Length: 210
Length: 210
DNA sequence: CCGATACGCAACGGTGTCGTTTCGAAAGCT
DNA sequence: AGCTTTCGAAACGACACCGTTGCGTATCGG
Image 1: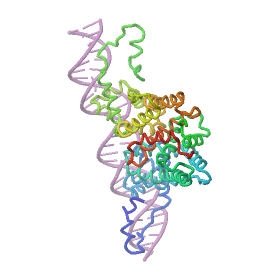
Image 2: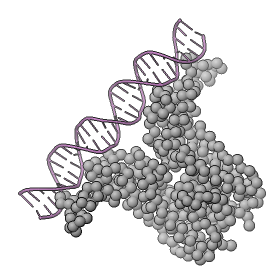
Image 3: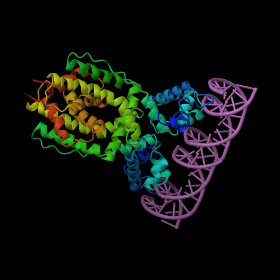
């Protein structure tokens, strides 16, 4: 958490081992509800700028006070909310690079079709420039794990000789993930069956004549 | 223009040849200023939702009346503004597919580095879901020409035999443009020299071992 | 010159959100 | 019990925009 210290965190707890703040403890449930409401609203297409504390409070069934007590501003709240996002990546079977890449890209395509992920992606791309701290957080919890997953597979392919040793791994990964990103955004929405497979095969084999 | 008809457009002009509305004509300069101000604000990172008519009027040095007289709502204004965007694509020399693709991707990378294009891109990706009409307009004036440029080069390569005849052109184009998009968004910002060249070469030759 | 329209500007009442404050009730500790 | 802190709810004054209207001026055609 970012602004936990704001109220009592360090003061009451850091020095002596058993420093509870005395008084009614903060409701863990309220905190969950607030974060969940925040993510919900974002997932419904709300940009960070339009997110209103009032709407979050109302949606979470919580008083505004309860929010302001924990986060001093919207950005901190959103940052903490993003940080709770889990990244359930599909497991990779590890048999062949081709198969693993298809698995990962297909998962990416699937996620891009869901409203929640889609809107989060939008926020990530659009509000990123305006809220650099948010961007950092989002990249860390959402983009980075996926990038790493693809990167690991590619790197493994290089190590095992399945892929050429002289390739630029970052560019490879950009070609793969970027292709899927592009296609799901602006490609023709039809003909997306077996898209992951087509992308992977074509990036693997190249498009130039031999 | 979308809502020109709102006031006098069709009524005064369509029927008899010489039907001017009588009275002071609308200032072309004001119109330009309004649209320019709108694009400016968007380019400064303003999302469509946060765009305020007041801000636009103020920035354009224009009364709100002058805006409301022409556009009945914000979306129409933004749509018309986007429609005025020119797409100065780099000329392509047509010598080799590789060279042409590098030219186009390098231009894309360059554009992604400019704040104006960057923010417009953000709006395109983020507000697209919320304002489908805007999305359509933007795709038409900004995305489509670029997509077509790359597509034409790829298609030409297929025709001349420079590229394999069995490739999926759309996937190829997604791999190329998508890779650049991905890299400029989330790739490590260093080491972007010769990026276009690296992407093109690697997509052309593929990454799999032979 | 006259009538008509557009111009920039300032003001209107209305709405939504801000961040803060107050309130009575609830929930923990000693 | 008594003390402390948090809870949800409601209200506060402040501000930013909304979309509209009126005002005095500018610019056209007849």
